[in-house]
Length: 137
Image 1 (spheres, helix red, strand yellow):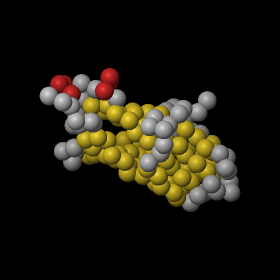
Image 2 (cartoon, rainbow, N blue to C red):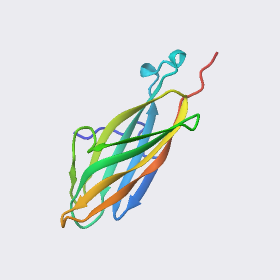
Image 3 (spheres, rainbow, N blue to C red):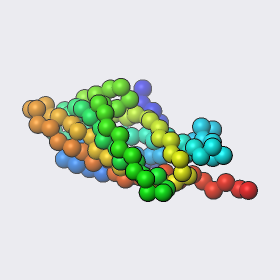
Image 4 (spheres, helix red, strand yellow):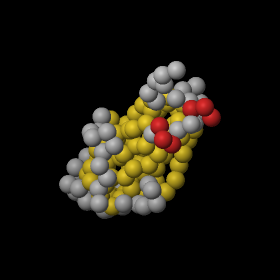
């Protein structure tokens, strides 16, 4: 089952060595509590393999910057509990989320992958903005 794009399209994309990472993002007001200094976004990632060989996503690295310029680094194995293999001409989708203590911020990062011959390489995740809609007073 493939999740639908949150916003219906993927406005952010980056391609590295035939692997395209596309991102759509959506603010989630129902999970946010601005009065408590908490804003929450969901992001949908699609990893497309346009190369000639299967690749496996091993690890992820994120740089999350809040509206004050404070940076948080997140590293770990796989994504959403998986280390997917993406075959040539296929894609892998997942949805995750990010809370911030400010109503704006940005995310960017990379995936560390391995090809079928054992060669490892990093794939860029494009920078994307996290912007909460203005709240009427």
